Length: 466
Image 1 (cartoon, rainbow, N blue to C red):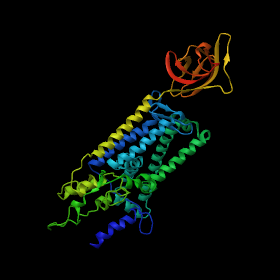
Image 2 (image 1 turned 135 degrees about the vertical axis):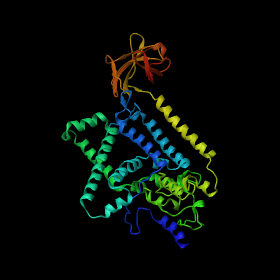
Image 3 (image 1 turned 30 degrees about the vertical axis):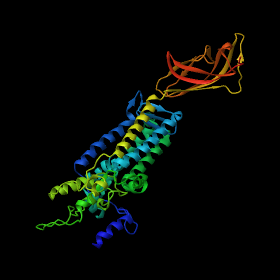
């Protein structure tokens, strides 16, 4: 009995990947299988397909996604965002953070186990390469302990060669999201000397990805990622999580042939520990920092329950409240409220994206210039205009007064707005003096491309007044 009381307390003092001397414990998780693992594979393959095809997919002639930080240019689903749209990106980022928090409070760490790129690459790409070349966990462990033979050399060489190759592909994809496919092609085709910065970036990213997935592995989740550490304040007894039903499973006991069983349903086989990619024992509590809710322990436990003729679900997705009180999970009012907030956030952000203007116009009176009166009985003001084109089309533009009678004369013959670029110009606004009731009035100027009004801007107009 003393052992049962001591182990949970000891668990709370250490993490699963560090031994009592402070040294790292290298994990050899058993290859998972089962219904939930199959679903995870489908989700992962879909997301991997989207990730690697993203830079090549075009929407309205533009990349589907581009995060060009050096040029401060971002493209989301064919829509260009410039620094002038920073408020939309800020709102989107805040909505995303709030979405993650509320989603975690209600639905647990589904993100970590099913959607997070670190988990997908580690478990569905690199780990599967490892299983393919070195075999399952016992074979991997034996190979690492074995002396360097021809078999060990070629297996390790093949594995790490593939690791580097996959890391290189990920690095190229990552760089394509930053600088675009066209610029990446130039780096590849023009030779190293012409693009030393790009080549250095490729080598750096490849090294980082290789180091993360070949050596650092689960330490990203338990040491680097803040999300796992924050879950302690985001989850409560009503949050859905991967949980061990201690009411049903305890006390644990080995299954013995021809003996009447008085213990709980847990036969203490440790298969849930062996299959865990972060090395934890889910029976020590559901809300463990290292648990990424990958559901591998659920699959393996269900298969063991089938073997011993016990009902499945000893480890399952549940809430602490439902296990402690033996109540079925229900969609509570709080969960409905949080889900409603999530839907509103997504809708608000989508509305901002849809209603965002593709043309930005900034019109300001030229500093230091006063108004001028003409012999025709009109008053003129000189203005500077800056136009930003967020589309992939070149647009010739004209300016018209919308709020007053009068004309606009552009100093240059015409304004042409380049695609994905900006143009600047100078123009005179001329209004009859009789229309000016005060010394300073507001006028509205329309920016047209052909007959289509693409932007409006309000500015001040100075005059002698009446």
